[in-house]
Length: 358
Length: 252
Image (cartoon, rainbow over all chains, first blue to last red; front, side, top):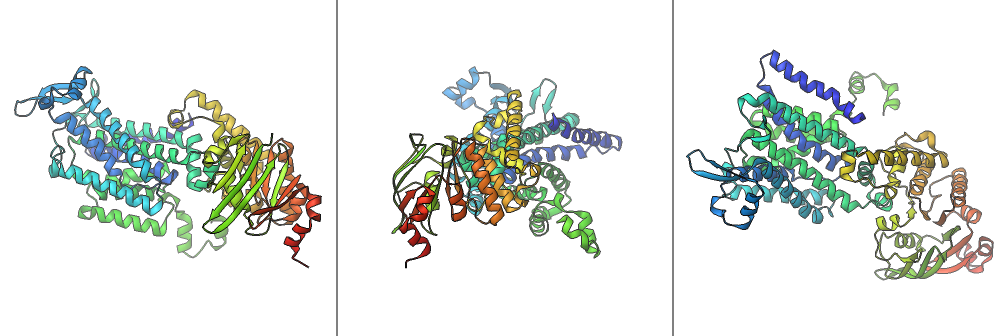
């Protein structure tokens, strides 16, 4: 209940932004706000993994891509050539297939978005289990390298495989009808509802993670971060908890990938790139690692600026620079900077306050 | 039946016999101490009992169950808790939260139940909090419940660590040098707390350097030297044992 209340001000802000853009005739901002919300869904999941469980992943764009690419491919690639194979028959009898026509009038047989979404997210979770079991035995730099390796594999796979559209990616991804009258799509007329779908999803994700952190599981995770040995001696199955957190964050990433792909109407290999993974890690770091609110705020602000093109062609360079500056000046995240204290220090005052505040 | 039974426990690190053929028993309800000079193999012994690493050979029986091959978290869930010589607080968590982690094996809520805050977890969560607060009170540290544990004084951290271990509701508590780094007053204080814990019916096995503490509170003492057990008796007898005196005071 308390968590729900803490989310209320954010809900007010979300509605406020809509009303403000509507009043000032700047509704086009909602598009980037929608996309930022999906990226932030991935980022808060990664925040739990990195900040609370203390496990780094430089491969989360990979999970985002697994979600996005699979749901794009399943909902656009025709299964007619495989009509007689067992998996396709099973999908058909379960009602997961949809017949239609492509742009040129040829008949199509594709997976429905709902089924594709579930398949994509489950696949991402299974891959997370398969990758997580061996690599989560590693720590620090070694874990970073191993997850980086995973990210590179996914990137090269989507880039090399014809099924995933090679360098072009997949386009013409249909709308994802969540409920009658409520669909995830880039249609101009659906802009407002998509803004609310994205933010609704993000708020739900946020409440779930805030709940998780303030629970037996969350305390165990923070314990692992504090002292893995002591957590183990307290009866925490550390290997299992780390794996479950890894899978949870992969699921958040995959869901973000599925939804953003339907919203954009397509996905390209840059979404799977290593620079994207680095960017997500940078944003979690700027947010303060073990700070869900910081991750959410920075996820929205930095993605929004990046999507609006504020960083120009130096986009990735800006994220690299942010990472360096944060590590140097605010390793506990941007929200940890005590502005008044810093100002006082700059002005040469506050000497007597120092003991009290540090 | 003994609560804990070590049978011919042996640990070799390369050519070094860190623990060599050590056997003894811990009876329910007693405070038993393992003493010995530096490098005698005390902490190695502890690490084998709690599952941090396996013994080269020999057996550890806890409540009649074989512990060899079990991991620390499994040993903990059987009812054995431990503390560390260099206190391992969960940094970034309050004293109360540290103790609440100790309730882990006594509670169930998993990922989904916690995320969706299932109604049955509400009571569990309240019980975890109440019980942890009770333990902080028992160890007379309740006023610091909401302080970041890592910022407490060393002696206070010891108390929090004890409360955290007790939160498991262990039948056996292993204390690795509970007086390490404490001054003479704090040591006496910890001694008093350990006796208090024993009086709750919890068996205590401790490794210690500080003779005054060991002689004051232990019911029985095992003396290790270079990995071997050289004596096992009540404190008054240990104080008279010529072999022990030789080790501690040197030969005439």
